[in-house]
Length: 144
Image (cartoon, rainbow, N blue to C red; front, side):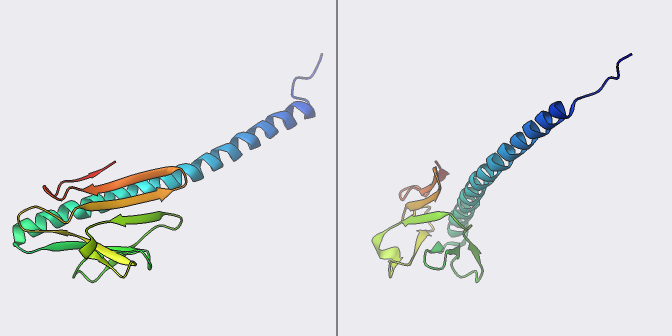
């Protein structure tokens, strides 16, 4: 009677295949994690901009989102705290010329009538890109 089991060659082949698949999963997960970081940052900025527009309308006073490109931080003007931008995420701010200060920081302003300076933020990580846009006439905020 013959003993049943696997040969050493079969076991090594299976272990090699498992190692190859695990390596591919880790590499894919790292790329997906970067894209998730990009989406999360874009959605957080979108939510902050929408809230700022609401505050400007409800409070009857202008509100602004400040983006400091040099220090890689962004926050709500007058709030005193800011958020850091994730490592490896490139950011470009587009806004009214009067709202760009020294080339290193700028702001997007919302007014009590619902309008804004308009503009947006371009967030880039590797081959992925997202835009957080603000319409100057309506103050509408959306992500592309």
